[in-house]
Image (cartoon, rainbow, N blue to C red; front, side):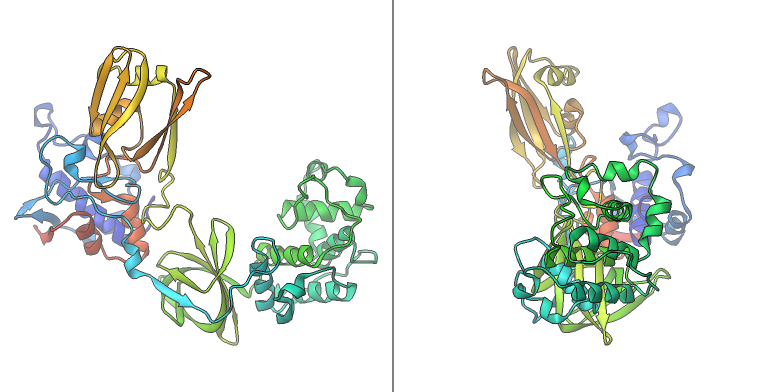
Length: 492
């Protein structure tokens, strides 16, 4: 099932039912009412049904969407790219008053903001270092004093490395194993081995690394700096688990002293990879200024009080930064650490794609590249312009969709409107921009169409409805958001 949110499925059920009743008899001359193709909003048959979608249908039985006491033409689209479009711009005719373009990010209204008194200062020059140290402090692996610029400078002593590793094993609630690494542990390769054997991860390497994996992973410029078989195995394990990476010159520098930064980052990566019991991961149900509620598998939510001085971080697709406040909505993923009953570390996972409710769709962003020859062939069913020289956006709609596009060529110009634009060009949507790659003579070698969404972009956005439901919206709110000024009525 594509959208496991009951309220979104209820909205979809009502829209589909309304569309079917409004368009009943459309293909009467052929002996049936509606088709199963995109011309009739698509139906993939009984195999696409599920217990949750059946429940949505049953619990909305008889409900229709109406405008002036008549069922509406309840169009819906897969992914609207953050904003739906006026129906009149996509389809021929005057358009219906309820099919107006709306922004697809209403979850902003349901957001909660967590704030902290903790400073957002950077530690060192490495991106995300402050976040890694804050995580280790919250887990009790390193001292609070480490969370300062001076605390990450230079190289740690052997005693510090042993103490940090022991506390990490304790935070992971593992029994741990005896380290086999030879002194001094301050050497990078020795620290790798100490970390792996202390965690008992050498067994992981012996059993889970394939026969050729070690040589493949250790294809570096300085393999001889790993002196023993145990050092090689340990480095391979840490590379495979994403705990360490080669330097930019493809070296591991096993003979060099381990720096505080390198050691701390490796410890933080292990804590994440091993899934420290103290590091909780969950999905936001609701957030307030001092409280966070996480959804549980049984549908309930669990409350977590947030410390006023909690360290807050925002991860934009893995790029992490300390923040003084973080906005959270239902469905957001977070990682947190609690101490004495309060959240002292929290990281929110956000997307670079922005705040749109349909940003989770794999079709939210796309790109198509066409040569002039390919474009000429693509538009052939609508007309010929000879050798295509350029395309020009003549008019856009309320959402930024291209609603009039001129294709110019050696034999004239072809003006495409509405849905014919995407059909002619073979694009997923009308919401796009055009770039041009030039050849050596300055002509267009390739048109690059970068766009968002999939479908006609009018009416209910299916992935957007899912995003709204994740944020806590009811089916009534979803329906009324995408269809302007309508009523939901019990028709039977």
